[in-house]
Image (cartoon, rainbow, N blue to C red; front, side):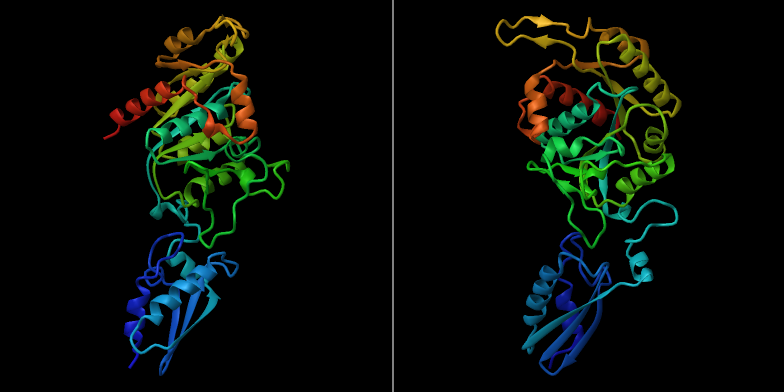
Amino acid sequence: MVTEAAVRQALREVMDPELHKSLIDLGMIRQVEIDEERVHITVALTVMGCPMREQITSDVRAAVGAVAGVSEVTVEFVEMTDEEKRRIGLSPKKDQEGAAVDYNKIKHVVAVMSGKGGVGKSLVSGLLAVALRRLGKEVGILDADITGPSIPKMFFGDGARLSPSPLGLVPLSSKTGIKVMSINLLLPDENQAVIWRGPLISSAIRQFWGDTFWGDLDYLIVDLPPGTSDASLTVMQSLPISGVVLVSSPQDLAGMVVRKAADMTKQMHTPLLGLIENMSYFECPDTGKRYDIFGPSHAEEIAMRIDVPLLGRLPVDPRVAVACDAGNIEDLAADAFQPIAAHLLQTVEDDQP
């Protein structure tokens, strides 16, 4: 004789494809009906348009079909009530921690910041993520530049979009396994402008942190927008930042505004991990001679003035632009960046308990 207890025990082995937790533990099994050898299962989904319905159906049928005496298994789907969603943490919490906080384990959060645009902050974020991944780390990138996102273009090329998920926000994985979340992955057209005021931008950043199912990460790299306003303030106040990497370029103007960014981080009591100077020089491929095409470097002077280590100087390299435009940043050798990442990794992990 088939019993409900036996069916529910079998369903404990059926895992949600995204959360990797039992459907029983998540409260997704609404009802079990038994008619002699036939079993009907009602499964409650967070959204009826869940793209994992077929897999859940298949897994439920396989598990329950293996119970002694069962000859037929049917599955019906309904949508969870708001109370059921809140019970398992899939609705925004009143304390704004986010629906995914209890499911994420992120060891280190590193923000990449600059006082002005155009210095290669997003490039440094991308290269840092790639370098850490090559060192065997589990890595994600949170693109906090809501109005000027560029991270998806570097990793996926044109047209990358997130698929609907019953869990809400699930980052897109790159070809080497770097998890990426950006507003451009959610827009119907990547060229669509995001015309939002500060509070909406801050809310989106908090969602990308707390409502995104990042899973287990060694490092989450946060690519901040230029400046020291709402977005940067939100990140430093809402995320457990392990430290900030500052990015500058050789021009005096860039040095002045990066000092403003450094001052902000100190006022927010956020650790400064170091400075990277981008576009520091151009090395002629024919002769190997270096040219300071944006003027002489001020990296050492700036680093001393804001009392941080100089992590490194990156050259102007046309191959980098070509690879990033094609979504192939992970194919770059980026030899100049690997020692920077190794140094940064050691600094962060030595400072953590």
